[in-house]
Amino acid sequence: MSSLDDRLIERFGLGAIDRRIAGWMARNGHFILRMGLAVVFIWFGLLKPLGMSPAADLVRRTVYFLPPDFFLSVLGWWEVAIGVGLLFRPLNRVAIFLLFLQMPGTLLPLVLLPDVCFTSIPFGLTLEGQYIIKNAVLIGAALVVGGTVRRRASEDTRL
Image 1 (cartoon, rainbow, N blue to C red):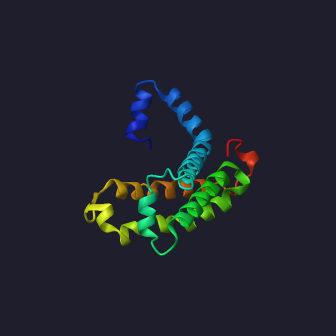
Image 2: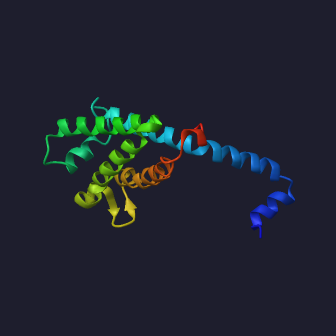
Image 3: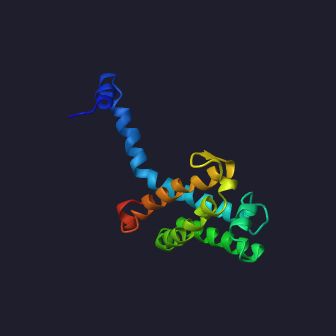
């Protein structure tokens, strides 16, 4: 049984274009998602050791028990390693492993610095809180990319 949107698409004669667009997305979506994740991790990561990260103060306040400049540099290069690992398919497992080791730490400010992350707990988020919550999307994207690591490159040349 087809859904209402499928019936409407066919009714308006859009079935062929809909199938082509959906097919293009299926063929290219994983690759574009992986490249987007790589860019985000490389870009955000490089900002930290270069002293240009808007998140530096938040990181310093969260991980107050380590030397802040040293930790920011290590964290930044860790994120760059994740991004580079996502660029090259044979390194995806390592990149996703590093990403999942790092992600719990990105959520620490929600617990350790609620006054910085929330205007009203639990739903009123500050800009910093929004920055942290967006990591849910990065985690979801990493799960999707991780779901492709057992595929052979010949199964999809874009992966």
